[in-house]
Length: 205
Image (cartoon, rainbow, N blue to C red):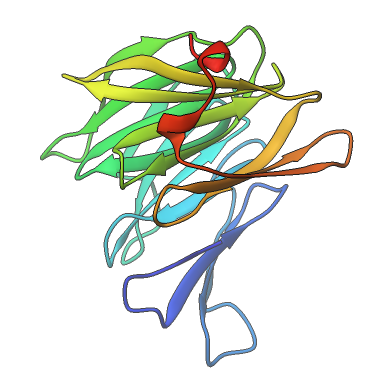
């Protein structure tokens, strides 16, 4: 689920193929994009007042204009299920698909273009976040590692990594970048509350 910049409308998706558009004052969705994907939708997000991006287990990332949802504006086919994605700068995206982190640009014609692709994990990446205060990408998944990536000239460089005892299925970072939490497959919740620069040297890669 994600709210529009106006904060009055939002989109939602679940483990199905449809996207629903809502207004907070209505008890039912305003409209549904039926069959938006051919497999479970993993994420849907506004990138402007009228544009949303969706990612799915069908290995595609799609761009939609909510004013005309008959067909997507753009479709990008990837090699693996899209588990997560984010926009870290205007028109610049990172997509977690399989063990890959794929960097994309959305050009002036609303087409996704692959800029770079990295394989920093052995197993699928489940979640990615952007730490705005340090301009870093954070990624974690079935490897049981949380990694921090610096972005330099459209390239990702591992700055730190943290090992945890089980697979990472969820995590988030505070707005100041000093605290983050991880939800693991074994049911445990890990909360770190120290500056990233203070992470022990043995956690560095």
